[in-house]
Length: 253
Picture 1 (cartoon, rainbow, N blue to C red):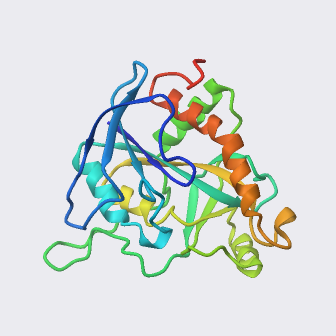
Picture 2 (picture 1 turned 90 degrees about the horizontal axis):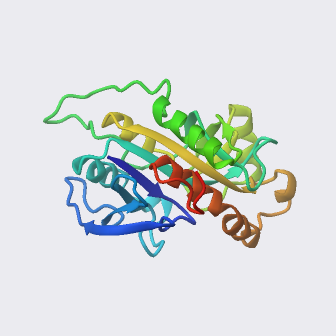
């Protein structure tokens, strides 16, 4: 079964006919919300989870990532697409661009980031050389191609603690580290998915130039970010609709 974790701007799926909702209890506490099951067209049943809660009430550092991933795994999910908004650092990633990253750098602090805490269970060390699932990345790129949506194949996602945005100096440092984009929710989500052996990939919408870059030299426009989300989310819905086997939300294949 496939799941879609929705981030900022994606609180529901266009065309999703909801069949049921399920509250899942986990050893790690409460997930961000109930799991929503449904189908788009004649596609198979999928699961949707709003990462920030269904009223967007959970800040990035307050999300229970372990509960979210555990709940999805517990109900039989084996493939996950994580949708997120990001700021663009390198020049190709301008507002409105859609990216399927292939690497990640973790700058977060104080987030529970593993299921393997030791104690009564053995410690495990998972390989994160390639942090995103190759099969899911391929399927996302192919779905975008079928929808006629241009996406950037690859890039390094730098994950910060949030909820504040970054300083210009922090972004310059991240650029020197090799980051192409910056977001707040990519970790520990990707690592936890790997620990559960889930085929996990991210679909990122660039909503703004990162702090100190191009149009954001002075400050970042929150209104501008909202406009980009409104203008570009249709393409995201199209890719997701194609991915789950139902064609694009506007009816194209």
